[in-house]
Structures are given as C-alpha cells and as structure tokens.
Amino acid sequence: MNFAFIKRNYHITTFILLYLSLLFGFYNNESTTFGPKIDFEFALKQVKLFDENFIYTFLNYDKIESPTRISPLFILVIFIFKKIFINIDVVRLILLNILILNQFLFYKCLKEIFHKKFKIDKKILFLISCVILISPSFRSNIIWPESAMLGLLFFLFSLYFFLKNLNKPSKFNIFFNIFFLAIASYIRPSFCVFSIFFFYKYLTNHITQKFIIQIILVNLLLAFPAVYYIFFLDINFIKFSAGDLNFNIFNKISIISSIIFFHMLPLIFYKKNFLYLKFKSKDIILVVLLTFVAIFCALNFNYDLDRAGGGIFLHVSKIFFNNNILFFFSIPIFLYIIFKFAYYEKIQNSIIFLLLFILTPQYHIFHKYYDPLVLIIGFTILNLGIKKDFFSNKINIFFLFGFYISYYLVSWINYYYIKF
Image (cartoon, rainbow, N blue to C red; front, side, top):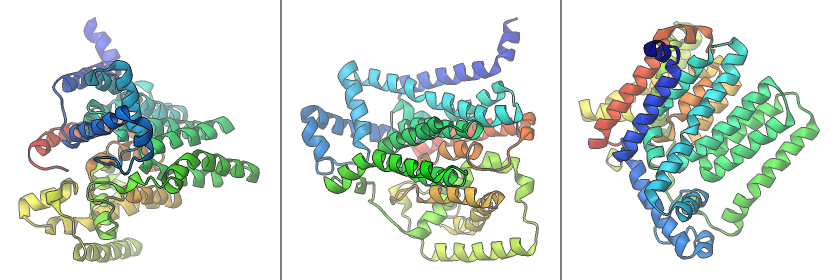
C-alpha cells in the first residue's frame, strides 16, 4: 500500500528526497562548484562593514575595504537576516529554504505553458522542475547563499507573470513582470538584459502606443535608483570582478557557446533529428561561415585556465591533449547547434541567445552563470518546439535526470581538481 502511494505520488517523493539531500549537503557544507563558499565568506566582510557603519558603506560601496561587484542589496539582505537571526548558519538555512522556491516557480512557469496548452500531467511538470535541485550550481549557491539564485528567484516571478500574460493578457501581469525583473536586476545586475526581450515581445504584441509609453516610463522609474546610485553618486561597484571586465569577443563566443551547448544537451537529445546537418546549400554555407568564425576565435583566444573557469569542454581538451585543439575544433559544432535553435524562431530565439552571450562581461566565465538558467529558458521563452512527445517519452525524462546526475558527479571531481 505504501509502495502504491509512493508510486502514485512519485513527483512529491522525488522532491522530498532531493530536499533531504540538500539538508544533508547543508550539514556537510557541500560546495561542489567550489566558488560559492568562498564568495559567501567574502560577502560576510561587506556585511560586517554594513554593521559597523551602514550609511558610509552603502554610499562608498566601491571604496570600502575588499570591494566587490556583488550587489549591495544582496549584502543588505544577508545583513538584515543576520541582525534578526544572529547565527550565520541559521541565516544560511533560512535562505536555503527561501531559495528552494525557485523549483516551485519553475514548475508554475512550466504549468503555464505545457499544462494549459498541451494538458500535460502536472505531476510530470513538477518532476521536471525538480531537476534543478540536482544542479551542482543551484545546490552550492543556495547552501552558500549567492546573489545569482536570489536574483533567479525574482526572475522566475517575472517570467511567470510574462507567461501568464500570454495566456490571459492583463496590464497587471505586464507590470508585475517588469517589477519583479527590476528586483532581480537590483540583486543580480546581469538579469537586466532580459528587459530587452520582454520589451520586444510587448512591442510586437499589438498593444497600444499609450501603453508602450507607460511601460517605458515604469522601466525608467524603476531603473532611476540604480542610475542615480551608479552614475550620479558615482558608486561604480560593477567594475569590480575577478579579473575585471574583459571584452575579448573571441573568448566570449568560444567559451559561452560551449557552456550553452552543454546545458542544452537534454534538449539537443530531444531535438536531435531537427539538428542533423542536411547538406542543403544553406546548411553548408552556415557550416563554412561558422568554421571561419572558429578560426578567428582560435587565433585570438587568450583565456588563462589557471585563473579558473572556461567551461567543461575547454578543460577536457586541456586534460586529454594538453592544448586547446579539440576545443577549437568543437566551436563550429557549438555555434551550429545554437544557430539551428535560433533559426527555429528567428527573431525571438536570436534575441535570447544574444542576451546569453552578453550576460557575462567579466574575464572569468563559469558554468554557474548559466546553470540552471539555460535549462529554465530552454523550457520557457526559447521556442524550441517542445511538445507532448517530450513528456510522453520516458527516455527524454530519464536523459534529463541522468544528465544532471552525471553533471553533479563530475562536479565532485571538479571540486578536487579543476574549476569549471
């Protein structure tokens, strides 16, 4: 009887087991991606400065001891929680339980698309949303609270209201979409790039010119505190990053395309027939052009792996061949897949991929910047033609979970050897 109950409620059972694994990871200070523990301990230095002199620290955030590009609002969240709960481990545990809501919001987004449109079983959608609880980046960044996952939480709120508006157009849905994206951007500034996509969708959604002006004004109003803080008060904390800002476009194209490719592998597995090279003239021309792009990237590539990051494929090339040759030969494949997915819905998908490329302006490029964001976007605002057959074929679900379990295990090796 109990087995029948568990089988019938497999989605809840999966969630409970994964949640318990997170608590176990918390108890053992799990940090499979290595960086979050260091970042959190570094953030506590700013928390201490807020505690000593709040006004001075907030108004001199780029001049304080040990400056950081982490948003002062995220530091403020930790500061407030620490004031209330005193013990930093209690603060971490409470934030873990708040940040786990990312999974629930991902489920709500999936339900808006696939349950309302295709009547997909909500249990399957809930199960799929649980996969982010296996993601090594997600796990580490909520066990050691990091601004990316708190920003993702509000981004998912924003995404939910955007998707809700597609099903039931409402000014309130649009304004909530804008409002929550603004909060996400204040916590993690990189999320602000998605305002370009949402604004494009509203422009092409046949809404009135008057309402477009209202949207612009609301965006400007919500952006004003940030503009005033950075440009008028001249508190440019964003310039501080590991290795500072770096705009080598060849590094970006190579590494980011490889990381996007990696995190889209479950969807590539599903769409493999669509992605086959068909030896038509336009496909041949595309491959030739991408090969030239790869050559330019290889000739101008200067990423130093000793400074960490770079993505799993670059590390694999270095481990097995002690050079970047395998990685360089793979660049046309990464770009070909992205271009094929972009072509599925030319403008919308192209905008999203472009935003993913400009998401990381700093020198270091880690998997954690795109995990689990790429998967979430792949199931929601990227139009990849995901239909009923994805959910009805258990192999797709098994591959999705198998991929993330494998990625999690590889990340344990990463913790002791290399830093993706």
